[in-house]
Amino acid sequence: CPVKGEQSTGRSPEKRQSTDLALENEKPTGNLSRLERNVNTEDPKWQLIFEKMKSEETEAVDAVNTDVEEVQFLYNQERHNRKIYNTQRIHISILQLLFSLMLTPSGTLDPLYSDQFPLDNKKLNIPFLLREHLSHPANQNLIPPLVDETLKMGPDHFRLLKLLCTQLFRKD
Image (tube, rainbow, N blue to C red):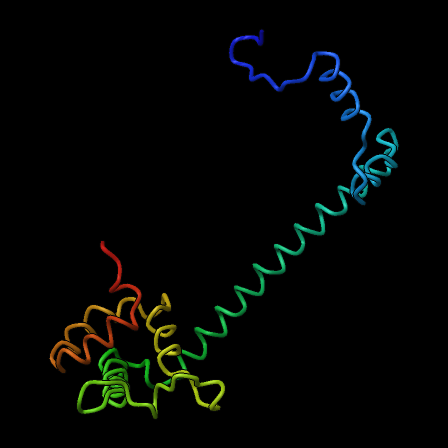
């Protein structure tokens, strides 16, 4: 009779015990398992390898942080040099112009500015670029006035803005 909570496997206790011993004697055959069996844990050089790997990881993270800071600095410098960013009004006007160019008079997307397969047809993916532009942290303060101005342009333009701006999809 099996112990309460255990399921009966239909094998006798001797067979179960021999199966458990066979599993213990069976050693994994993978490359990492073989490497692990060959390692002498008493050898202090083994620790040096791990310490070197940790220091290389730290250096890589520092290099990435430096690259991010440098890219951010260059971005801010270029943004400062572009006249479109001089005033918020100019920036909003250019975005409104792009929305108008992207839509046909019937309110559908103009294939000239939004191709179904832009890379195959060697065109820029304007909706993607606008989405990235509107999602950039430096442009977040632009969204509320852009919404107000785009609402004045009509429901088709506002629908396009809602599709391109991830901030307008959030529930909060």
